[in-house]
Image 1 (cartoon, rainbow, N blue to C red):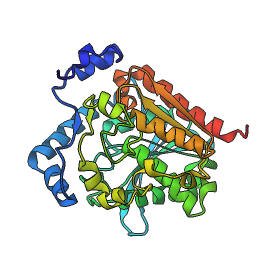
Image 2: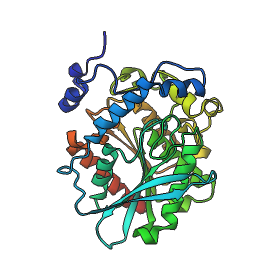
Image 3: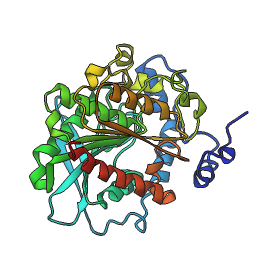
Image 4: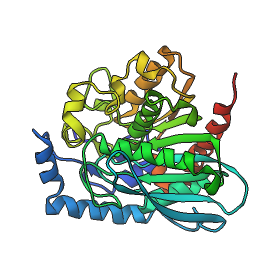
Length: 351
């Protein structure tokens, strides 16, 4: 029997109503592919491009000034160089219009590392909501592996990760001019951005720069690389609720070799206790009705086993990345935004 969101009593009634508008998952790749080249060809067919454009138009509607006002904020864009490739990437910076030195949330957008942009309307709204909690938000538009963000180049792993690491170092090095407290930098991201937030953290530790990061907040992280898995029941139970993950499209587009090598910088669920050693205080936030829910919970348990100070929260009644639909679920989104802000303070304690 096909899934019917309007009959899923686990979901918030608003979520049931929203999802019932779509005949198929809003975010869905094709069936399995055999190579990155095939993934690129399918992902850039005219119908796929048209679908992305339609989705971007829908997400543009998520930035509603009455809900997430620009008033009281300074919003800026910077172009910086990323290493080691020397390519250009863009940062979107939002902060309260004050001269106060603020903590900073370095935020990495989702899209399965394949598509999307922090300049889309839903990310502008989400960034403004977080900024209104009294922090500077810096969003990085890294190189996607399938479709362009605000930069034209697409490239597989580790290009996007390198861009995220480079952007973080730029924020740290320019903290004074940004009006940011360099001792209070939190890395956050959702879905594919949750993957990259975790991988950026691991990269900083490996390079000896762990002291630059105060904490980590990963929402609904997209980290398994293969779905479904029997050890991740939600990958079957919640398949097709907003997103579809029963394919290998993402692994091939991002880096199939890295998956086969169980590289935790590409697919962090492969991380060993040694890989997780030295992680800062980490919050994993999952959505109840999300195919990715159980991989986030599994990663949280790996963190605890590695001796990391970690917590996990489950937002009941929600679908994948529910917080990115701000005007439809403003109360849920504000609660999570406040929790991100609160995690900065909690990460600063030594208890």
